[in-house]
Every structure is written in C-alpha cells, then in structure tokens.
Length: 448
Image 1 (cartoon, rainbow, N blue to C red):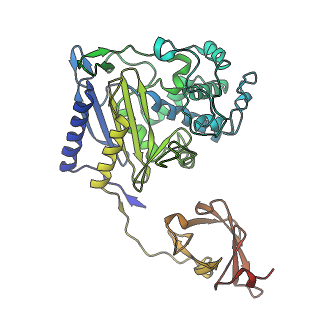
Image 2 (cartoon, helix red, strand yellow):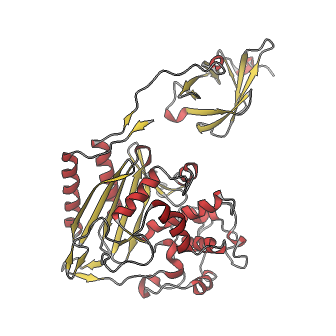
Image 3 (tube, rainbow, N blue to C red):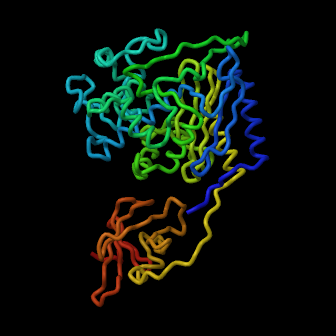
C-alpha cells in the first residue's frame, strides 16, 4: 500500500501554470483549461485565454467543453456493467442483438478494443456534412459499411464500433443517454456532464494557421452515434471521473472490471510498443510508468485524460480549438511533472502476524533449476523469483487444505498444489503442474 500526495507545492503550481500558458500560446488555442486530481480530489486547475470570444469570457471549473472520444470510456463502462450483471458476454457476437447484420460475427470484445476490423466511420461524410444519422439511418448504413481488416489483425480505431456498442446498450433495454446518466454520471456526482450543453458552454473555434483569426465552429449533435463522442463535461466533473478511473467506486463498477479494462489487448504502435488499447481505455508507456485514459477530438475541441492509477493521480486538459492543441500530450506531461515532484510514498513496513498454517511453505523452493521463494506479505502468501523482476511475483489465495490459486502476477489463474509426505509435512509443490522441491533437482531426478 502507499500514500499519494494530497496537495501541490507552490513551485510545482508555478511550473504547471507556466507549461499551460506556454501550450496555449504555442498552439494558439483561444482557451485552455487543465485540472490535476490527487487522491480523489481536484487539487489544482488553471484556465488560460477564453472559453468564448464574443464577448470574451474566461473558463472556470464548471465550463462545459465537448469531450469527444473520451465518451467511449463511458460507453465501455456501461458494457462492463452489463457484463458484470450477466446480461452479456464480451465474446458474444453482435448478431446476438442484430441477427440480420452482415457484421453479425463481430464480438463485443473486438468492438471495445478496436480490433474488429470495422471501418473507422459510419457510412456517409459525417465530418463534412456534420449531420449525424438517427438510429434507423445508422443501422441502414451499417449494412453498407465495410469490415476493412480481419478481426485481431491490427489496432484499427473505429467510431463505428462504439456507435454499435451504443446499440447493444439500447437493445438490452436502456436508452444510452439515460443509462450513462443514471449508472455513471449521477453516482459520481457529475451534474454538469451530458449530451446537451448549457447556454454558458465553451465555444469551439478553428484558428487560421496563418492569419491567427478564430472562426466559430458549429455544435455537432451526434444523435445515434453519440456513444462514440457526444458528451460535454467540465474540469470539475472530469476530475470526479479521473478519481473513479484511479480508484473505482464499486457502486458504479467493480475494481477488477476496471482493472480488466485497463489491461493491454492490442498494441497501438506495434513497432514502438509504447501505446496499447484495452477495453475502452488507452495505455501509454512513459519510461516505467503506464498512463491510462483517452483523447477526444470534435469540431472546435481537443481534450485529453491521463491517469496514473497506482498513484491515484490524474490530469484533464481541454482546448476549444479544432486543431494543433495536443491536449493528451499536455495531460501526460503534466501528470509526469506531478509524479516527479510529488511522488507517492510507500507505507512503512510493519511486522507480520504469525500464520501457522502457512509457515511450513515458507522459504526457498526450486523448479527447473531456478530458485523461487514463498513468503508472507500483509497476511497473504506470495511467490517471488529472486533472480527475476517485479513481473516474476505471484499472490495466492487458499482454495482448499491442499490448493492455492494465483490471483495476481505470474501465471495468474494457475493452481499451487501441496503434496504432503507420508508423515504429514509438505515435501513437494506443483505450480501450473511444474514440480517445486526443497533442493534443486534435474528433470531426470524428479521421477515419475
């Protein structure tokens, strides 16, 4: 366990402010709003420039911006709620609910992970006409949409896939907007988030790259395709959401389910191995840190959410500009700056209580000529490989008098089996069927 920082130093605040101002000037975005979350709370925010230019109106923590594809994470949470409730399986084909579609074999998991191979966009020229389809038009267009790649061939981002996931939610009896509101927004206290922006919302602009003039962008209403990008939100509300991503409220989603969403399923950059995608959330490697979150882009808005879950630290960045604003990158840069300046402090070690039922298992064992060690941490049985890395550690829970199950780390899910000797004490273990003995043995010495 560890203790995250709960406030920012004066020096760090000045550093963050300088970076935000520099970004706003460099990008030439009319406005830029940023928030930092520590330990579940919005501890710092900064707003540069204007949310509106006519008249000039600054943003604050409650100013709404269109968050674009960060909306996908909300759709994914709804799907995971349905999975946890037994309403669907992630490996269900989409034909379970749309049996007549030509894409009936595509699965829910493939849609969530952008590995379905479906075309990037719904049929039509949405980003030119800015006229989104209603449900009937969307489903008609679905039959004209191509599966441009085989499933699991490569990461292929698809707005169409997430609009289709919205249809899954609705086919299971809940209007997507109502489900997001009642199952996510209301429990998290996100009262300024929804599909319909308030009158005092931020205005999105396109800034001419040469003249520097700003043209107001129209408000895009995504209708049936809203599940891929239609929500509006605020720094204050997204701080609540970042806190949920870092440490989920079980009333909304179980921790294990959010952990599952934040595990890589497909590499975004197979050559660089720094970006991956799970079930609705993206992952980015920065050194030894993994950030999770999502970006968003809509006419007039570029947004970014980055969270370092083990440290319970998150950053939100909103720009009211169509182009140039690298909001996701800024969120990641500020997140690293916070972690560098205010690192999470591990809790002091305290001696363990005695666990007589585990004591005969403790200490060194050998398998395939390699030493492994069983030890107690916080009252639980762990295995580590002294010559290995942090990835070579395993946490177990007891299933019976002679079996444990690996529930975290190396060979998760596998069984650790105890083999008592004739006179009682354990003389051998099997882990994932491999024999562990108290002294190193060759395979030839193990016997039958």
